[in-house]
Image (cartoon, rainbow, N blue to C red; front, side, top):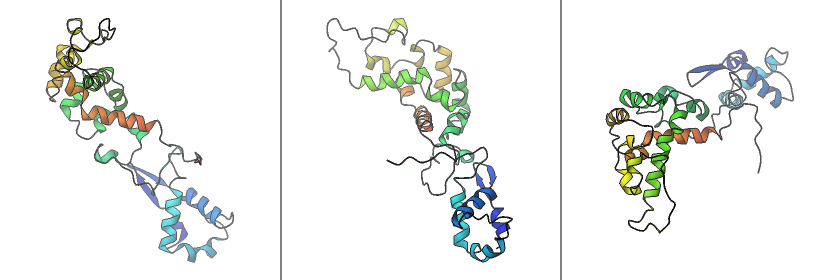
Length: 236
């Protein structure tokens, strides 16, 4: 196999085809004492060596992290994936890109869920992760597990008056769990109708909604994802 063929290898990542001749050339340059292999007088000498399948795979594998449209980082060595969380067409995308993608990239969000979210201004994965009503519901779910009935101390200042409608302010956390989402300040009965279509009828169900958790996990990991092909690795 001629070296020209090797250098024209295109690797599909996330629906985008990246041509990697420069990256492979850079690998060869470092491997063969700084000599450039593509278009140089050394090409004929190197041809027999790089015809081996092992070399071709090695070159492409090492070139991927160096290649990129706009310097996007990629690797064939990593094994992590979230194929059961996102749509097939988005499986190869990084956390950073997914975080800013339309909320419909999350696997399982159908037309009803999409409509319910858009009715409250949520259109992207990041907006869902940061949606205050979802975060309030999650906090209530978590804290309700730590509540003891009838054990409120005298003079206790604990309240969530700025998050719950006035008529429900005196209720316990466990009682609030059973209220409709519209009990949260800012959501309306119309929101209840939209969320009822996807079986979210209470604050507890909203706080435990798996798509909310998936969105938050993606956004959290986006903050620690390496995205530049030229970013040096830090050793401990």
